Amino acid sequence: MNQTPQQSTPGPVDIVIMAAGKGTRMKSRLPKVLHRLAGRALLAHVAGTAGRIGARDVVVVTGHGAAEVEAAMAGGIAGATLRFARQEPQLGTGHAVLQAAPLLPDDGTVVVLSGDVPLIGEDTLRALVAASAGQRLALLTIEFDDPTGYGRVIRSAAAGDVTAVVEHKDASEAQRAVREIYSGVMAVPARLLKGWLARLDNKNAQGEYYLTDVVKLAAADGVPVVAHITTDALQVAGINSPAQLAALERAWQLRQADALMAQGVRLADPARFDLRGTLECATDVEIDVNCVFEGTVSLGEGVRIGANCVIANARIDAGAVIHPFTHIDGEKAGVTVGAGALIGPFARLRPGAQLGAEVHIGNFVEVKNSTLAAGAKANHLAYLGDATVGERVNYGAGAITANYDGANKHRTVIGDDVHVGSNCVLVAPITLGAGGTIGGGSTINKSTEPGALTVSRAKQVSFANWKRPQKKPKA
Image (cartoon, rainbow, N blue to C red; front, side):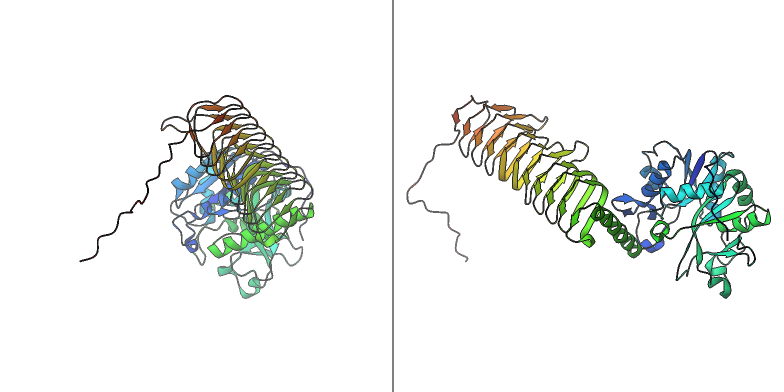
């Protein structure tokens, strides 16, 4: 049996990602490669891996929904030159790579990937490129107990050399008994690949140009074909249906949960945990069920996250407690929750919310683009937008900052130790002096002096024996 040679990567690496298929079994208008796994498009996973292994050029072969797929890649790939090749009509995998061939320099090693196989690993690809060594055709293979539907890796009886890959529909009964299958991932010198692609034909059960036929062409030309065998089925799992997508999502999430628990994170139920980005956790972090983490999230020592929270692009410092059903979304501006803060339940922190130590944000409180200093409290039913809030401020129920005049946003500044009563409207731009008190139900549109009591209410009037309007009797 072939052994993977231990050699350094020979020259530049170029990637071809096949992303032209319709994905009929997805039963969706969305191109298959744009369906999402762990919060990102399948194609984005593959392209990201291509960038991380230092690819020089990445050629994405598009076809069905080409304009939409290409638009989704508009941000490019870090460190690589992104190009597109159209496959119209779609005549098989060999035909797909043939469309990319003119864009591939002759001096590189080409790695062929599939846009619907999202979890291929960086180390695996590096090992495959090393196996190719600039002179071999290297295939990524795996053994399945049930290989139905996959191309079988055929080896010579004497030496165990790879001589062909036979697609399931074209395989004999003896060949179908083979458990080693080709994953769809290969590494091959570009100068050799181009010649083999030009010699492909479609004389097979599906009338397609199979990329796998380059194996027998390589063997016929005396070019060694080596197999790098993986045992990680997730890395080679493809997506063809919503059921497969859901199964891979759950398998991937469980793997991420296991990794966090190995670091000491306490998950109430790893089967009810979703990570759609990166999550860094210090010691003694606890996460309850049905929590979703997106973007970049950092949890400090002893942080507790209650059930059913959604947290994106946020830093939560040591000892903070995020009560159930809280929604934190920092987007590009980010959110910071200070040490020992108490947030929720049912709170919402929007981009630019910067909360100091021991801040309390209670149920049905929304904070956007606002800074709250240590010890400030807004415990229920309130809105703080575009505000600077001092230390130990008590912000009453039903109070809001009226920060938008219909054209521009304005800022509200609330000094230290201010008490804002319930149901107040603070019309920005405005500054409330330190230590002041705003009487409940007031609408404040002028700045206040430090230490002052400010009240702005209509005079209370009562009308004795008031009769409410009555409905007219029906005719």
